Image 1: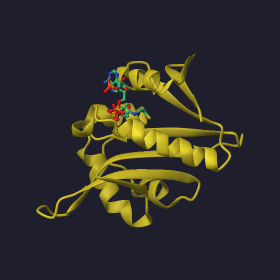
Image 2: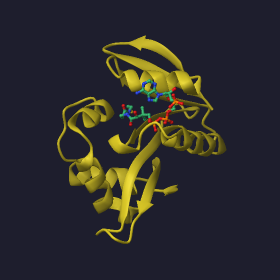
Image 3: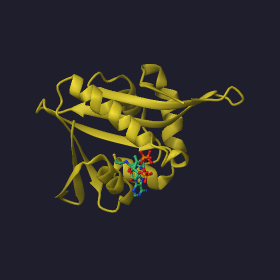
Length: 154
Ligand SMILES: CC(C)(COP(=O)(O)OP(=O)(O)OC[C@H]1O[C@@H](n2cnc3c(N)ncnc32)[C@H](O)[C@@H]1OP(=O)(O)O)[C@@H](O)C(=O)NCCC(=O)NCCS
C-alpha cells in the first residue's frame, strides 16, 4: 500500500472508491444519504488547489484496474488562516489497521508546514467510530447543532 497526494488524474479512481463504500459510510462521510459523487465534486476533490488531499492505494496486477483507492483524507483552509476543515474516509474493509491514523498524521504534518494550527471537522452524533478515532488522536470534541465538532491541534 502507498499513500500519496491526490492528482487530477485520480477522478475515475475516486469515483469508483466512493461508489464502493457502503451507503452508511457515505452518509457518515458526507452527512447525507448520497449515491454517486457528481462530476463537479469529483473535480473539486481532485483538482481544486484549495484542497490538500491524500489517498491510500493498493496495487494488484491481477485485477483491472490494478490500482484501487482504499482511503482518502483532505483539509481545506478556512478564512481564518490558522484553521482548516478536514474529513477522511477509509474503505469498509480496510479499517482498524491504522490507516486513518496514518493519513491524519500526514495531513497534520502538511497542515503544520503550511501554517495551519488546527484541523476541525463536524461529526454526526451517531458516528461512534469517528468519536473513538477522535479520542485516540487526542482531539477535542464539543457540541454543535446536530453534530459534534472535532478539533485537533497540529
Ligand atoms: C473513522 C475512520 C476514519 C477510522 O479509520 P481507521 O483507519 O479504521 O482508524 P484507525 O485504524 O487508525 O484507528 C485508530 C483508533 O481509533 C479508534 N477507532 C477506530 N475505529 C473505531 C470504532 N469503530 N469504534 C471505536 N473506536 C474506533 C480506536 O481507538 C483505534 O485504535 P485501535 O484499532 O488500536 O483500537 C473510519 O471508521 C471511517 O472511514 N469511517 C467512515 C467515514 C467517517 O465517518 N468519516 C468522518 C467524517 S469526515
